Amino acid sequence: MNKKFPYGYDVNAYIDKAFYMKRLFFALMMLCAGMLTQAQTIHVNHHFWDGYSLYTVKEIRMGKYFYMTTSQGNELTLEKVDGKQGEYKLIPSRQAEECPFGAQYGWRVQHITQESQNFLAIRKPNGDVMWVLDHTTKDEEKCEYLQQMMGQEEPCNAVNSILLNRAYLRSNVATNAELRLLRNKILAYHGYRFQSKDLQEHFGKMAWYKPVDDNSTIKLGIIEQTNIQLIKSEEAEREENQTGDLLGDEPYWETEEGVAECIQEYFDAVNKTFAEGSGMNPYDLDKKYYSAYWNEVMAHQQLARKES
Image (cartoon, rainbow, N blue to C red; front, side, top):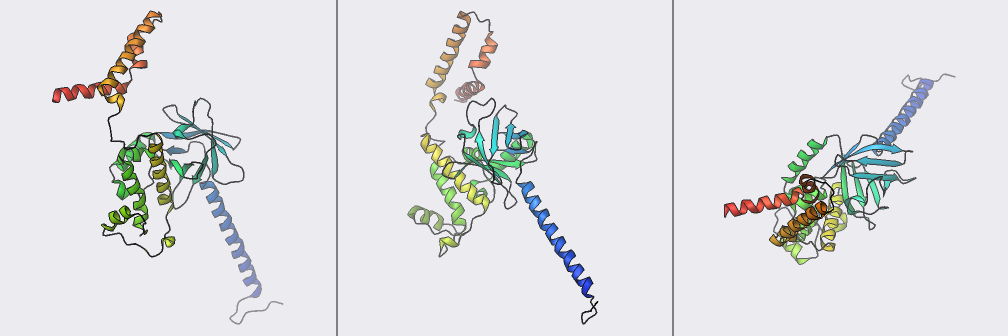
């Protein structure tokens, strides 16, 4: 029987429309899920920038092994973790003699696609991010230009809104004390109530700092979470390597004694090579033993003598 609703709606037509809308809703849900999966998937020719080099996905084997290279010949290989979307781990590459980024093989790599961000985060065993590679559609020259532009941004202004990388931290933040303040500035921006007296005094001078009553109410974005962990990793590495402040004492190899030792090693290599009758000419030796870095050091010292 074809009944009608009080206002003239046909029952069958209403049911058909409801069924159609349900199917449309389900299709949209599946489409959104597919788009999310697509966003979390690494494809051939995808590019990832770490602040130093542009890594390009060259090959994907068996849908599980992702091989990347740079124009400088660096290699990076990831193995997809079964059953975990966006989860990978570092594995040895074809030619690389050691694990890149100062990491270790087996460490977890997470493909993060949240809050309009898309990047690879290499995590230490304690879970902290120690290196990031930002997904980009730019070429290497454009990436280098953008890195320079980011370098002109004051760290305290960038830390809450820009995904930082280790190259930026090493170029723009000289001391571990500054790294600590930078890391805690992220929290201070949200009104975090500090226990340390020096942090209370430092941020208490800032007009924008408004401490909250309960720190547990603070919610950090994915950029802020990642930057905090990245800065902690940089602090830990400087302490472990006993480098401490990057602008502290002059490195040995940039002192007169260090340069003299390098030059002596160079001439020792020249004498040894010609003594063995290898036939190498001085230009080849110069490229092999006397790097552009030392040429730069010598040029700097010569310029300093002229200016004095």
